[in-house]
Image: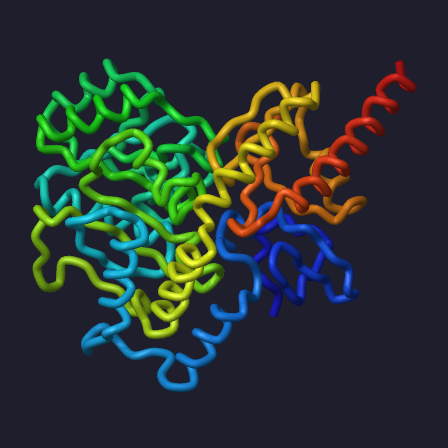
Amino acid sequence: MELFDVYPLYDITPVKGEGCYVFDENGKKYLDLYGGHAVISIGHSYPAYVNAIQNQVSRLGFYSNSIKNPLQKELAHKLEKVSGVKDYSLFLCSSGAEANENALKVASFETGKDRIIYFENAFHGRTSGVVAITDNENIKAPFNLGHKATKLAYNDTEALQSEIEKGDVAAVIFEVIQGVGGLDEATTEFYRSAAELCKENQVMLIVDEVQSGYGRTGDFFAFQKHGIRPDIITMAKGMGNGFPIGGILIDENIKPKYGMLGTTFGGNHLACAAGISVLDIIQKENLMENAVEVSEYVKTEAARIPEIKKIKGRGLMIGLEFEFEIAALRKELLFEHQIFTGASSNKKLLRILPPLNIKKEHFKIFFAALKQVLKEQNHKVLKLS
């Protein structure tokens, strides 16, 4: 049986990970500056994390949500403590798309409305409701187009107010820092205005922290910098350091009822063990502080490279924007220098999403390689001209 071929694949087969590195089947070592789409938050094969999963699976790996699982409450209490986000309830699921789907469902239940406002360059997932509010028409099947969704320009408060005041909006959803869309971030004034408009019009404000959450920006959640309080917060990628886990934080004013939400695998024993371990390590190793410190170094070094025209993002959610498309640059970094980086819908943007315990020394390796690749590319251009 063949695999359903929907992914263009690099000819690399990682078989082992350690810290900020992965190793292929031939023992070749790669510096991981992408973390598998920002999933690897505490580094590959962190010993305490591995032990937590091994110890849990030796006792009980899974049972359904029809029984008590004290690990879920432990995870919820630890999440509140480490994030500083209080007076929310936690619903656990298995992915970012599932988290966003459940957030939309809660919003619709709570308001009795069915239209969702989203923004240009948004990416919220690939399941039916959230792909309808993702700004990529190429990944929407006809089935996905039946949802009531309105796309607006990011940072346009007047357009947002006009749509909200029509009275049929259940929720406004945004990534504070857009991921796939290219690391754009609106102004604090926009976020605060959006929050106020939602509150005044009984609209749920959903903040998608699937990629930007869990310390990646230096704050636990990216929205915290802007002083807003969302009704619902979604999260996933960094929660389990590679183990599938997602969740939503729901404001205490939104009351649950039996049957409102459900999941088979969400909040299972192994997922909770992984999630608790990640939070422990983020706190113990001061990884949010490390994200800020290393980010400042990266920005300083990047500013010295003339080919980099713009530095985007916060913490270890970094975008380096060049004056040219970066596909060839990424391939050179990967195959000639063994460094993983990422792309986005902005074809001139190099996306960097490393483990949060990365050090300046790792970025010294990256910048040395980047300068060499840029020098070689410039030499080729001069030779051709």
